[in-house]
Image (cartoon, rainbow, N blue to C red):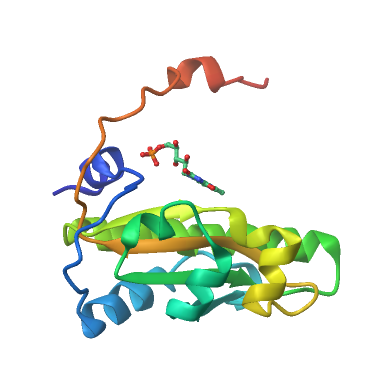
Length: 161
Ligand SMILES: Cc1cc2nc3c(=O)[nH]c(=O)nc-3n(C[C@H](O)[C@H](O)[C@H](O)COP(=O)(O)O)c2cc1C
């Protein structure tokens, strides 16, 4: 599949099959994701893999769609708020790279934002000043939803003189 097709066929997956994800595949997708652009090579992303006890404590409504793999992507703090924002941007690029690398292999992901809530940060033991990009359920999709339509891109563009 071309990268354009991969981008356009990726979906947020809300329910997964129990089939396991190969450890080496997972590491390959994460390693590929680390080629994300990042200013000054801060490589600000860090990962927390969530075991069953932590997942139970988070009490997510569907336990991340019963995904066989669940991890959080954190973004490192920085000396200034400008650099911290840059870290969040780079970590988000890392996340999207991962989603696309997994999708290329037929594996879907569920990006959930609840990890950023204060009580969930405590459950995850997120160090102060780190940002939580998201918690990601990863697995083979049990259901693939239709694409949600996007606004025509021309309506988002302004040309400056
Ligand atoms: C920063 C971020 C946080 C998100 N958090 C949630 C969430 O908490 N729950 C959820 O159902 N989807 C969440 N999503 C997924 C979006 O709902 C989803 O991307 C959007 O509906 C478009 O669908 P698609 O990914 O299938 O194209 C999040 C996506 C992003 C980028």
